[in-house]
Length: 260
Ligand SMILES: [Zn+2]
Image 1 (tube, helix red, strand yellow):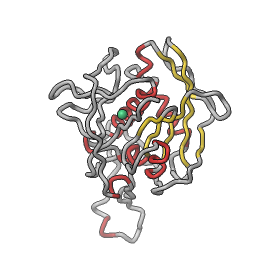
Image 2 (tube, helix red, strand yellow):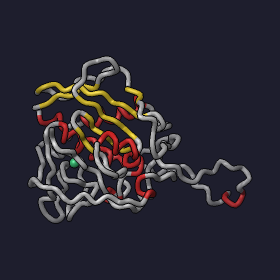
Image 3 (cartoon, rainbow, N blue to C red):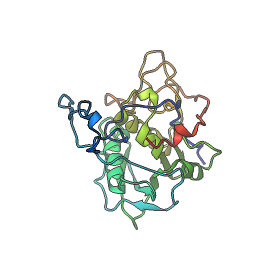
């Protein structure tokens, strides 16, 4: 049994800018006249304006049951052995359909900078009732500990056997080290944990100021590196020396169960 991949730890400070994924102030109250001059206009200067989706919400502990995304994706990658995976979202996580999370996972794994770029593995998401090699779960903080089989954590994500377990708290709020780059952090989270399932262990920052390898525990801190999600950032494998940093998980409930 491969060791657990405790990946995504970080500090407890809030990431304050979470493009469209975190509930922020709204201007829906028509009686709030004091807000009239403070209401932000749609950000016309944003490079990719998108409608604000309803914020993802979740309880501390979900039901332990799941919705598995339907249908099959295309086969990702050009060569190598084929691994099939399911994508499952725990019931209780609201406003994030399994299909939406599944699309993000497939996009990340099929990226030209992702694991399939190496030509030694192909990946395909499959729907319910189909044979599969592993499952990518999106779960609540307390269920994370159950599926990872560890002591109290609630903050990081992990890989445990054929379970790739993504903590919804990190998926929605990321970590301070990614400085508001929620997309980048999600790319890291999926790449790192699936990397464990593909047989990759932890790696260290290779030098001050250099990009972090995807198998560095970037949730825990960057250790002098800069945030970097991908295993093949320039189409070429980028790795650091084998090794890992101590797993120090913030225990303040606000770190893993933010409701804002
Ligand atoms: Zn890890």
